[in-house]
Image 1 (tube, rainbow, N blue to C red):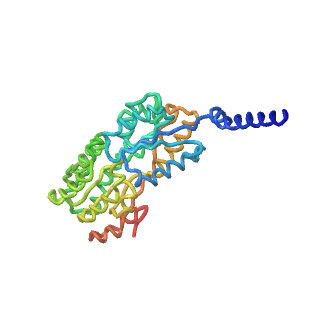
Image 2 (cartoon, rainbow, N blue to C red; image 1 turned 30 degrees about the vertical axis):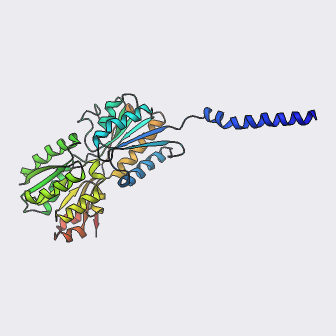
Image 3 (spheres, one colour; image 1 turned 45 degrees about the horizontal axis):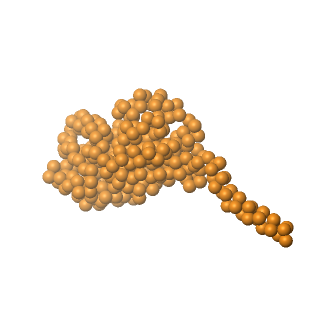
Length: 331
């Protein structure tokens, strides 16, 4: 009888210990690092960007949901929400912040000097004070620049080549991204007279303002439109392409998604290349590398995409010289 009581007592003790094992083991395992992903975009249209970022992370040895967790913070086009979103990530003590544009990076830099920040920006980060130099970023920031703001004048030239008799063109910028808006406005206003063009600047930071800006193109007698590189506009490529077609307005943007959605042309860096490198850098930092020791990566791939179907709908004949230079022609 005593042996039965002893056996039951042993089993009860064993059961209690077994129940405690997972908790104890969990306490001994290193915590999975958490990346804060900060963007002023909408999540849906950014799916291909996230896929590229996760691909870079995987190359560096990290898989979301297994060896790393990602906390997504989407401002959904409202840049004034960015400081609050990044403050929340800092409070959660994330291991790393990924900032997907200039406004996001400026907000993250203002919020923390300790948490590493990996950015993806379209301007020279040294010119806007994010880092002292590309080779020696110093501090807690590094990342990728695709220099899309620098290709802005080239987009104006491409429209000029397509429309050699045009006299008036317009530039659409997001005023809540003043760094990009001012940089591009300055460069295009300098280039316009050389090309024999008058350039009007239009502003939009929400759907109603986008509609108003497109409506004003007729009043301004603009022959074509350059759309400024901006995370907010990135997530509205379809809307922008549709409006341009409805207004019979030849327009150019920087990324392929615009041309794929029915926009006439895109010219600029490849976001998939940029975000793969953001993922690689994030993985290296999680493994112990310091942002200060990782030079800012300059994405060099620039591609020209022409949507021939849209050109025909607009009644435009694309010069053979332009078609020959295109990296892709969508028919």
